[in-house]
Length: 477
Image (cartoon, rainbow, N blue to C red; front, side):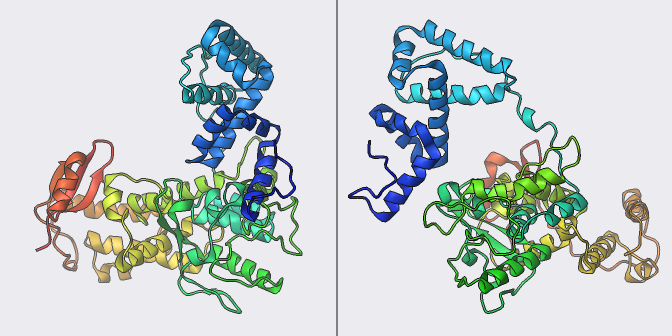
């Protein structure tokens, strides 16, 4: 088998590089590919996901080693002596459980064999009965507070801080910044507000991050934003990259392969051949050690907890009225349901982008590890806007220090106006500023009917979470 790391005759430079990468990733399990049946199964899975194909091949290989079988023998047992294969699998699972392995860990190896037999249409139902508990290995993981996250950032390299802030403030997955086998990653052109010059700068804050469909887990392109704290760290990182001799261009990676002098890296950067991108493993390793060292006693923090941090902090901002649920889900690259599909699931025009940027800016103080005066001003303006909307006048609010108002007093002011509204009592004080009339003729329909009404000009107003009912606004006159 031609698996030598040397250049293979007839292969292009790219093909030769990928073969070297595959040899390193698959290790000894690459020998399984000498069997045409195994290779056919592996190539079929590779069409959709190379990562999934390699994971299944390794799982299959480890299981065969423990059972002391090869790929042909395991198929023969499944067809001619299924009871023996069942007993081998049960004993293997029992041994792993005795070693303290979780059911979820054992099930991964069973999945590899299941996929292989299914692909070759081999009927077998003797797999061991397991009860994997979802998230059992993460029982000691919780979301860090902004103060705790700030301490984590202090222990990271310059590049590590940028990676961590992209995940924690923009909510991107590690696979957006890098990719399996370093095949791709986010580029500077995907940050349209970035001005590449002798001194890089952002023309807008928060700045836009456009995640291409090829880097999105849902295979749908989406837009998110970067905070002022992320912008500051990233521009400093770009400045050092330029001083180290890198020529920045639109196709340059957001996270570069080459480590910078003066960065106290505890790991060796490794990429695939001449790829300008990091591998996903290298990218997450950059922040892994700092998180592990900063975690309180009894708490575990994986790199992915940073994306959970973003989701949780935006959820708190949603509860504070700073951002809508649909937009929060869209910024995280989620499929937010039918309401989100019609409201923020299409390509954003200038107006929607402006509103989304303003909403993210209102939520930004919830993400930051250090509060800024700008964030406080936005918070105060949001309070003022809500109270005006409830019926308070400008004159009434002049006598209230909204910046220093406690949460209890603010909720009391809101409750007073709501009580007057439901009791039908006339509002106290000067007449409130007239408000635009609410849309008339709204309609409540089921999710299955939305497409029909939208085609006739109706627009989605909101969605009742849980009962699959949607409120529609009538066509504009």
